[in-house]
Amino acid sequence: MRARIVATGSAVPRRILRNSDLERMVATSGEWIVGRTGIRERRVVDDGVASSDLGTDAARAALAASGWDPADLDLILVATCTPDMPLPSTACLIQRNLKASRAIAFDLAAACSGFLYGLSVADLYVRSGTCRRVLLVGTEVMSSVLDWTDRSTCILFGDGAGAALLDPSDDDRGILSTHLHSDGDLWDLVCVPGGGSRMPASDAMLAGRHQYVKMKGSETFKVAVKTLEATAREALEANKLAVADVDLFIPHQANVRIIQAVMERLGLPENRLFLNIDRYGNTSAASIPLALDEAVRSGRISPGSRILMVAFGSGLTWASAVVKW
Ligand code: ACO
Image (cartoon, rainbow, N blue to C red; front, side):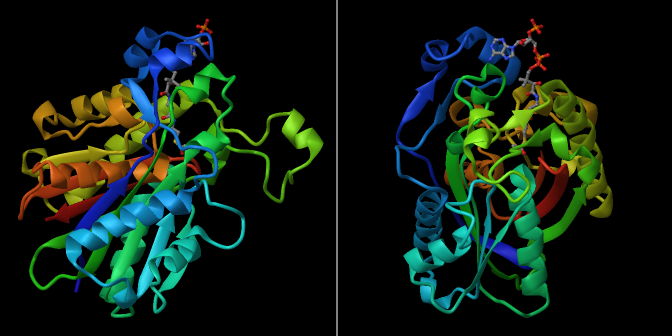
């Protein structure tokens, strides 16, 4: 029995950082940022706000939409590359906030592919009969790992969270497929080299600014287009679907030019695309669930809609999911 998504929720910080604000921080221009990425503004947290705070708000919104009691949750999965702290998991902190005392809780690290990796894990737990009620959260405070003096990365990312509740489907709707891929040979395309066991926190680590995101932008761009096209085709083939059968395409929101290149290669018309990168930038693991929640709440998704979601991220990881709503 496959899993289905019962409800979604999302949360973003109130504070908006516009391209015009970034013009005052680094040598950039709003025109360059919009033209190269499609991003106009992003949200950033106030001091002291962490991933579990945004994730809890997103989870509460999904719970309110479903009417579920947190005490009934069996499993809480959290996809994040910006956990509150190394220990404990952000999932356990969200469990505490929700008082979901019966749930197993753990984090999943697949960067921007994290939500689709989580969807696969959630689906397998439900299919195996191990868990019936699952909360999946993608939450990030990317602003905590950004070097605000590096114009090549600080303009790209934003903070936010999205959540989905899943349970067993009783008809042909639900998660039709997930496909996950990883290639550790490409680990250094996007990474945060410092702060872990390889290079623990130290004065030298901080002086070298190794606690921040490092990215090989143009190489990442090319790999992203190739892997997203391939994983989208793989998903369509596995479900015997044509491009015309896709009602809504929700790609990871990293760069509008990556998305456009993938859509051109697939022959997907623009009216099937859900895009919100202009308002949020790249929110990593929160990107797809945030877009999914906005699509649900704005009426872009209705019962029976076929949704194709694709993502790529640090690792390198890439993934797809096809959902019949
Ligand atoms: N403002 C103005 N100029 C800039 C800026 C900026 N913010 N950033 C870079 N430039 C300059 C560069 O210095 C370079 O100047 P030069 O030609 O004088 O050397 C020029 O612009 C072009 O730089 P490129 O890196 O070649 O620009 P590109 O067209 O590749 O765009 C970008 C850069 C937007 C980063 C693009 O490569 C990209 O989006 N890559 C993919 C990034 C991505 O998807 N990351 C996801 C990470 S996923 C995760 O897991 C977290």
